[in-house]
Length: 580
Figure 1: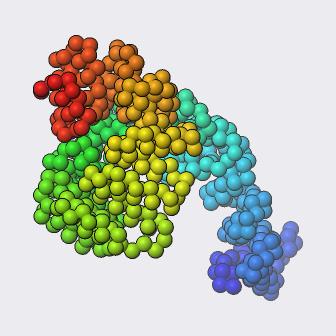
Figure 2: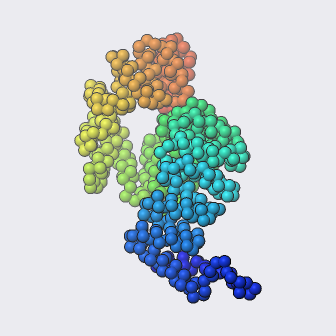
Figure 3: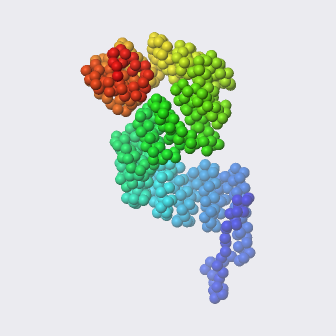
């Protein structure tokens, strides 16, 4: 009723009074008297009232019919809009289309009518009919709204069934914007995203290039280039690098770093984060991810610097739950660095801070247990984890895995295998836990157990490429069943062709097979991207066997710089009798 009264307040039936001169002339059309106008007002009000009441009571069909009739009789735009809304509310797109068309016919220049009609046609998959409407929308928009509209188009057309047709319709509608320096990049980016949705990768690449030709620093085009990299489009990396060489958006660079991390290209990710923190030192998240990479890369001093930047930026915002959670992770990371350096009191200080900012956090308790283990009290560490509450199997499994991690850090690998086995029984089909058991079995010296577990995974899930790589590498490292080893590694490479550690396995098995030159080429490629100590150990040994001893020493030194105590590198140098 309130809605009806609000609408009625805007309905005007005022007639222009007849001039005195024409008062006596025979009218060409009957002019209602004041009483007649009052009756019409009352009738309209009643119709609106009944329409809203029936809609509110669930009879949207009747409410829609009454409202559309009132709109046609009164000529009021907002009643057309209300009729359209009622139809959409009742999920009757066809009725909404009738109302929107009537609205558009009555008010051809109405922006609202144009937008409603366009979106309803999209809902109904009548994509071809939207071209003119979209052109009109752009023609009536100012620069700011036009840009917003262009950027929204891939989402607007996101649910249509014929993606290729949608891309063509949009390209036709925005043709007038494509050469405009102000709107062209957004228009080409929209076309590119829609072509990509239609699996037209080459067309999307062409659109991205044209967008960047108009504006090399356009964020939307940079994002599109990154999407093309993600789907493996030919030439996309070069396009993205060109964008990143200019004045890229921090968000695009950060997202590229995340992509590299997912692809396990950690060194390249760190390069991007280093550039990002240099150009935008106020971005706290970039410092935290960079610190994490420095921890993984065994660069504790660099990690400390990055963490301090993050902590300085984040502590003033610690009252925000998300920031508090991330800050707790930073404190835990700092505690781990100090613990690894055997600076246990300082590690405890960081843990205390983590407990304050995130009271009751499971990770803080686990790290506290880890610290106890480093202090030589493994039983107390295990008891602390075991005392943590577990109200369901998920929480119990999390406790068991945390206990296994503490055992692993304490090099109690056989016991860790047993604890992970208990966790695995809670989710019998979880291949990730079986894989963890296998890797711990290797550490415990149980190679038959490791092989049995890896084959179990491969039998259940042939595309589990980590298991294939691990089995292939183990066979190659022992110099047994080399043809089978190569087949497993090749299968893993098909799933993850750029993974540096699978490429390391590939180089190693080729070396074991006697294909030394091929192995060198593989290691040269992978080591430029991932200067890991274990990869260095293998690469150096291949070079050494070929008589390139100076080059081998250079590679080994680089490996030592990244991880001086790496077991594989230490064992290789000892076995070959090499002093660096």
